[in-house]
Image (cartoon, protein in one colour):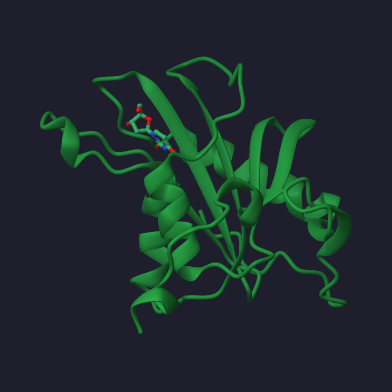
Length: 167
Ligand code: THU
């Protein structure tokens, strides 16, 4: 499904909150934007392919232009070939020329059940987010649009390894 651009004309998508990692101010999404992103992640979850773990994950990635890319986890009989939902969404966007992202919403749970817990991104997905995301990139883990947690990537990946180290 294409969500088109979800930004309002004013482009006001962010609010402020405290970064639990270092106590500084951080950006959080406006409610109508987080709602749309979580809805898109819940929908993406229905398209996940998880016949081995039966744990389905949906992710929705918001680009700087306000476009949403969705992704589900895609498992494989050779388990190591599995791709997480977050990376599916990120790779879809990057492979279409998009490299500037504002936020990602993630939902996960057992197949056929509503999410019971927050589905935090695995370490590999945090690293891949870090490759393309700025300091203010927002990660939402959601059970539904009314029950979610919002972080900046730095809270989830402090002291991360990045490309500047190997220049
Ligand atoms: N999974 C994700 O899609 N994202 C994560 O960040 C963690 C794990 C998937 C991979 C696998 O298909 C299933 O969840 C169980 O590990």
